Amino acid sequence: MNAKQQEYVQATFQALTDALLPDDGSQNMMVYEYVIYGLNHYVSIQQQLHHKVVPLAYPTAVMLDAAATQLVNAQLIQAKPQPIFSEGRMFSHLSRKDRVRTLSRLENLQIDLYLLPSPFQNNAGMIQHVVDALNRFSVFGYYSEWPAYGSTRLFPPDYRKLEYFPINWQRVGYPGVSLGYRDFRGFLFTIDEVEGGK
Image (cartoon, rainbow, N blue to C red; front, side):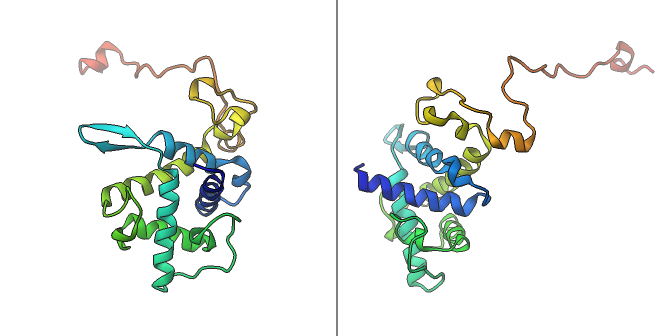
């Protein structure tokens, strides 16, 4: 991707995470980067007899805009005059509610699948799989340690280092990484209880 495409993809996924996540500074947590990373590294598609990981962030951004354009043209939603994120296209011109509505229409296949970009064109299973991934990646990136990896967050997983204690770990009361938590080893029974005695 060239620099202009990267800016466009970033703006689109900022708009996505802005619509899906709580309005409490999640943009500062760079969760949109996790969604982009996930689409480019974790989603595979079937090719011939094997699965292949294909970078899907750019085509997914184009799909979101194509779906938003269809809904605006059908007068089911309204676009704002200015995008919420400067390099964004039609999806970034929608209100939060209409961005979520666009995702819902995609997931329920209530748009013209022929007008979507490759590899989504006429591919209902792929559309539903990726829309589900968008929701999952957004929530996982928000509640995980992703933001706390700081400058190492885009490194391969083995090279990431926590640079501070994640904010959402504090919010949910997670105590943090440990050398080991006691493992559940079953319930304690006496021989009498197992054999049906008193």
